Amino acid sequence: MQALVFNGPRDIRYESYADPKLRSDNSVILKVESCSICGSDLHMYHGAHIGNTEYGSDIPKFCVGHEFIGEVVEAGCDVHGFKVGDKVLAAGGTGCGSCSACRTGNAASCRKATAFGLSTELQGGQAEYVNVPNADATLFSTDGLTTEQALLLTDGMATAYFGLMRADPKPGGSVAVVGLGPIGLIGVELAFLLGASQVIAIDPVPARRAMAEKLGATAFAPGPELHAQVMEATGGRGAQSVFEASGAKGAINAVLPLTARGGNASFVGIPEPDDVLPLPLIMFKNITVRGGICDVTNMWPHLVPLVQSGRMKADGLFSHQFNLSEGAEAYKLFDSRDDGVLKLRIDVG
Image (cartoon, rainbow, N blue to C red; front, side, top):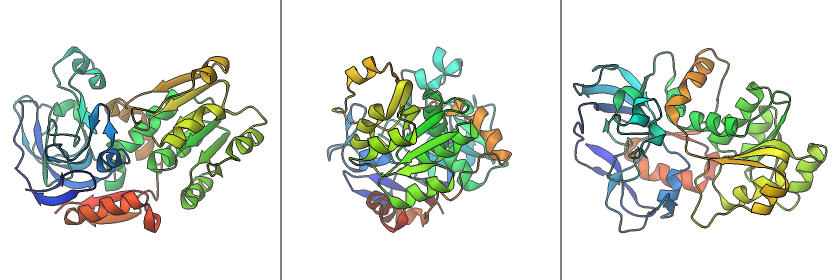
């Protein structure tokens, strides 16, 4: 098959790769129809860290990508919820399917849980075909969803909901979203949908701030005046709920000063090992801090009805479209932030 393959930092190549085989009886093989690039993929692309892995030039080749949808073309004997021909989306990662955490619907707590497309351990879906283990718990039908809605539900929309809810937004309360990539912009829309009376949106890119303003947010650029601007907008209190959706060092550092006393701060951007938070601010402002990796499948029951009913729009997030053979160019554009790029759709075949 053809796939996008990690060959080292800033070196994603469209090349031949071995066809996947069923890894277990609870696996399926998907023929991928569309996939997309996540902001967290750029940590890998830059040769930086995801968890304990540093993506230097000595990493073995692997297929990249954890956001993909497709058609089941082969199913193991222990797959009961899906059959050949089903059109599905896959969660961005999964567990083993057999431990107590997986059996109770908490695959994110599985000791073997991992995302697709980060190593040879679980090949990614920016490819013509991909093996999906623990299929019954990892897949979801795309019936009633558009291609772009389905792609967002593989990770980005779920992560936005997960991160926002961990900031404990209140009806009538104030929310600040730091970082206005797709996850942050979805967070802005969700914050209003969940009852926030005020949403403050922060990003260095003017076009992204403009998108947040169209959703009803008050938008600011990061910089030396940001703290004063947020304090003025919130009557000197700061935001009750702050959702960090970037992973950039500047975004991480901005969160706690903007958080109100007794407020909540949530982090979902992938940090580097040297990223730290100031404990005195947490202590003396009584801030509750949460961070984590989204358990995508447990977000679907909340999100899919909102999407299918039209309550959740998430419109206009896919700014560019490529074919799989153009994957290297897609990564370069996504990394550059040029040409108004926000999120990329990559079609396969």
